[in-house]
Length: 405
Ligand SMILES: Nc1ncnc2c1ncn2[C@@H]1O[C@H](COP(=O)(O)OP(=O)(O)OP(=O)(O)O)[C@@H](O)[C@H]1O
Ligand SMILES: [Mg+2]
Image 1 (cartoon, rainbow, N blue to C red):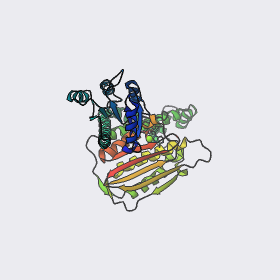
Image 2: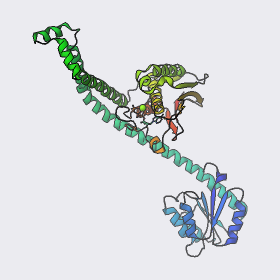
Image 3: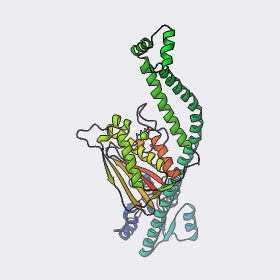
Image 4: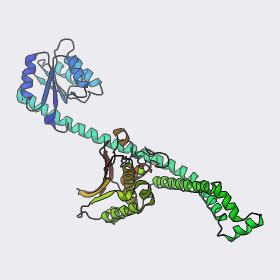
């Protein structure tokens, strides 16, 4: 409830006349509905669509009195936060005290003055609005903290794994590279040794070629390089608080450079046809230089461009024209960078997980699922900024980065 004039108020009273008076009083200001007993009130209170923002509750009702309704509302996680105002003729101090004991927010004695009811309803709706907002902030912050903690733990774990894997990988790579060198006709020693063994090097090479052995070695080399890249990403990710120094930089230069790099990137060009994507730049030229670590920021934008290109390559629509929009603007004390694409977008359950390390929907060899978690880390930890995404199936995706100026 961001606007209290849209608030839903539930009147619970067994007397139709009381309901009528209260409904007239609230008419035009809020959406008021009414029920005549406690069971119906509890039913409506848990309904996803009709859940009230405030309840005006009569105390004396047959079957279940207002106190019991209030007790049950306060026991249920879903309805605990709804303010309950008792409206009753039972004006004794004990009744009022009992009302507050069972969790009422306020108490209005009958006969009531319309202005009093109006003022109290408004006050409690305002309070609820602020409380909801605070709860939302606290929840977001808690989520961010959990995420940061998880990233930090993962960082330590990855640093350990990366360290252990680095040496064996380097030795596989140098082994395979040495094998190529020792089979090369350009190295004289190879020709001499093969002759001494009674086999021409060209014959040995021809055999290896015909049996596809060179291809196997090439695959070992390529995949080892890929593993080394993953390990280096892991190490990047796990760098503790030893972050590189920020400098003042022209963000538009950085973006132009990285677009250029993406266009000439072999993989992006070959596998994802980057050259055919229209890149629209909407730069706010009035943006001042921003403090950032240029390489890191460029890595983030590159990841976003690569993801967009990969998602666009999946679109099978006829006459589809892939477009990426890169926009910059200023919002208060922040520089905002937006990267939007018109690819297929993401379903909600995927969108929620994309910043998790190793979360990927891409097949083996196409993605490790580290691109966005590293990007998130670079923006939130190294730059103390914010990173978010808006996306929906069939609606494309828009990543937004806010950097403090
Ligand atoms: N622009 C986008 N459109 C649609 N889905 C996207 C987009 N960007 C990210 N995703 C989804 O988020 C997932 C995680 O992205 P992330 O960049 O972290 O990993 P990845 O691209 O799968 O692997 P890599 O480590 O190579 O980047 C992707 O697998 C994809 O499902
Ligand atoms: Mg990626």
